[in-house]
Image (cartoon, rainbow, N blue to C red; front, top):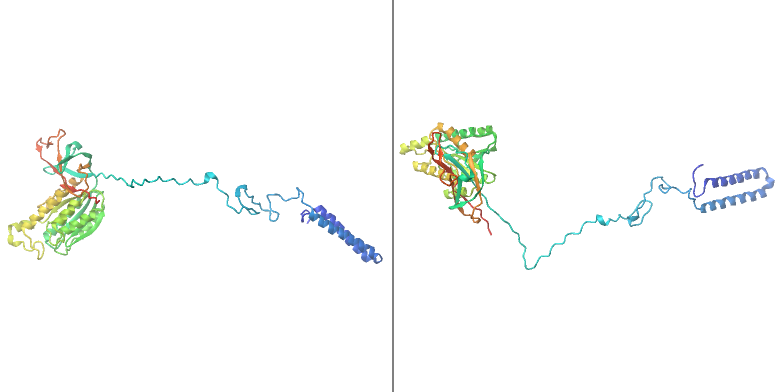
Length: 437
């Protein structure tokens, strides 16, 4: 134990006490050897023992000197560093650390919440919202033979809304990929109708480019989606290959077209409907007035109807008694029904800014769909803010004119220098937004 501190006494003091005790014990041996001197030795031992006890009590009462005190950074029991209590702790402390959480400084405190302005009692709360409508019109300018006329500028167009001239603010030439739905009539009607419908559908698929988005659907009693929007031409061909065995004999054109337009409302941007049909509606729930209203309310959709079945129609014209059941078993039609269907398709196209085509022979289909592709990919887009800014939901008639820079009629010449008649194709009108107060 030499070198260690025991209690409050130093090592040197303990050595003195040990020597005194050793002398006492040696005296006890002498007590055993010299029995004759028993009493004097006893007194001597007890005297020394009393001295040792007194010295020990005295050492216990002595304070430690500065050099004998343990360092402030070590605890006397385990030798680990002792945690110093910060002065700003603000609470009682012991040999472990502060009990209280240190107080935050003034600069660390969160800023006071802003004071809301007082509302005047006589002035009610209100919000101001300005809605400026913008009308987009797609215009196709071609020659009488269907050739697109390029190079026109914004000054070459004049737009009239309900007879009032409008100020065109935006002008672009469309060359973007198309988004189209191929809607095909395929029912158990007539073999020639089905064959020509497939021929027209394949001819349209051949004109597609890699960036075009196309969906394929057919209808009989109701519409059926064969493939959703895709850029894979093989998927389009595969969908058309499924049209082999027809089902019902009904051709509900109005219901199918309404369903297609309703689905296209959720698709952004400009859309097209390639409608391959005979134009005959047999059993639709919707009437012509309802489908016309739906077309008027639909925006950014152009319809291109393609009529099929000319050979059968020509036979019906020359053989009045031989057309019974031509459009399906138990569904007799006449030449007047086909003419009415042609008129409806022309109306659908005119209302949306498209064209209706009536091919007579199969060889016309490639050239016909080539024209449609040019019509779709080469359009002028005009935008303007109408002078009639009322959001009343009314239908407003549109008229687009192509003029020369000086305001006169635009003259276009062909390669031989002859004047060519210009055809301007645009939608007949649009339905304004309706805000309910």
